[in-house]
Length: 305
Image (tube, rainbow, N blue to C red; front, side, top):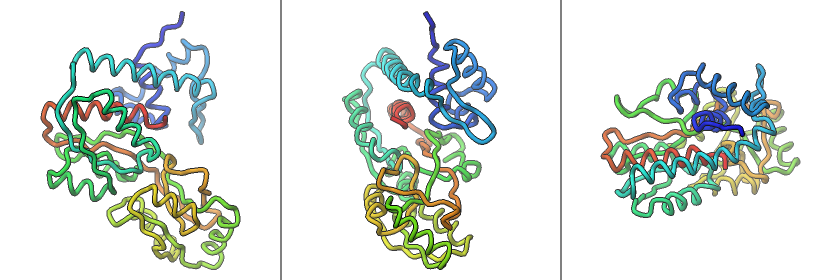
């Protein structure tokens, strides 16, 4: 019988989610060399590789994908058991601000699951763009924020205070997208690359980091643009883009089958990776700290489900 330890499974799932040894090492509180050693040991015990690695790509192998689902279930049950026997009934309240760029299709289920697991805890949820949510947090209207930031900004915004460190829950790519029909992709590509016509943008309100990055890279490429649609949620943005109202930038988890990808060959400059991060309370109470930990574990482990 092969026995797999919890630490190795947690490292495996975290690395599969983030595809970054640096982020994984920070998330599991290990060095990068230890992370590599844990993965190697896991593969030796299983007798097959779980990651395909070379200079240009990093992906989970088919057999690794099969293990991934089981590993998530094992970690979920392990963490729930530990919290229940060590903390008992978790109570208190927490004011959570969250961007719906965080797996928008799964967000309601995640919150329902948290409430089912911890019925004595009260979570007050506010949704919006990250800039607005962080402003509310600064004004003491929110305790914690799960928001989005550009990966290139990680080094300049690593902390929210001297003692409150930002926790990276997930990293994913950011894509230019339009309506999936090939005719729409071809038309928009020709306009941007050949005619240099202004690109119709579908965006969220000011304060959205994706909007700011999209406009910045277009300006740097000397590509004209105008706001054709400004929505109030990622769901509204997904719908507008799929309907052909405009071009938008979406994270990988926010894309649907109704979206087509636009690349450099279509006249659109690349966008930097996106990170979903948790901005914790600067001086949390015992209850807020416990709920923050529970939310972080739940959202991080369920990020790709």
